Image (cartoon, rainbow, N blue to C red; front, side):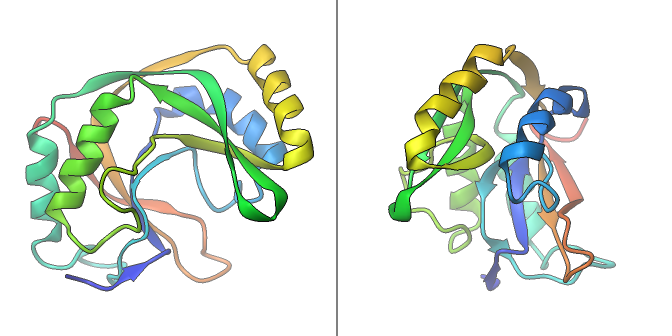
Length: 185
């Protein structure tokens, strides 16, 4: 199995038509706004690999594609916000993709296909789309304000994306490979 790195990830990207309201929140509250596009991480950190011409180690794309082929596209709705409390008095604010069960099944299948990648223990994946961070003392009020102004978004998950980034100034993640759910179109 390839070595892991925080410079690559397997993620779901909402369609760009959904980005504007997400990015409006992230631009104010997410210190990683410039580095990441809106995304739901499935496997992070992922594998070290060269950027070109072949973006993945041999066999890795095939294992991910086989896992993705077994999963049909599914709808997701971003309606509710939540938060994770961290040590040191910080909280991460996030949108909850619902229903969560197809995302959990997809993540588990991908994790089985590429054992050793990702940093999660089996069964601990909680799907989310991060929109920012806040001090614990402000997080609840900010969460309530963001929720009050939020209009739900819906889209269909049809593919997973493999993302990577380079060294500064080229350290914004970019899609290097996409894999369709349900197999080739």
